Image (tube, rainbow, N blue to C red; front, side, top):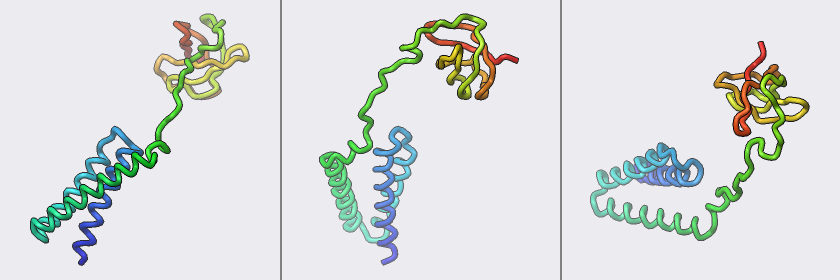
Length: 156
């Protein structure tokens, strides 16, 4: 009896991990691979402990159950609760005229890692450093403005 509990637990945990892979963290494949390994190990236990008839029966039941869960999930719209329905169509500094010149001084309003917010002449812009990390509330100056990208460096 305890072996059946272990087998059913492995199969259910494996299937749950595969579903988690599909819904919550797609693209990582690690969780999905672990899930497939759990299901496979559970099925191997059935074949080794109860023979081929029981093994193929449990394999068939697992396959039908998995297919049924996927069909139900797609038809019920369960996937739509997790799907991104909005798109980002704005661009950086697009709606703000950039009237900054090289040498203008300002202050960071967020940390630049290397991109963040900077304030110049009482206006906030998205600015970027040349790769260095700059803390919030650090004095900065403009060193380059290129195609709506504002490059800054900290003032020492």
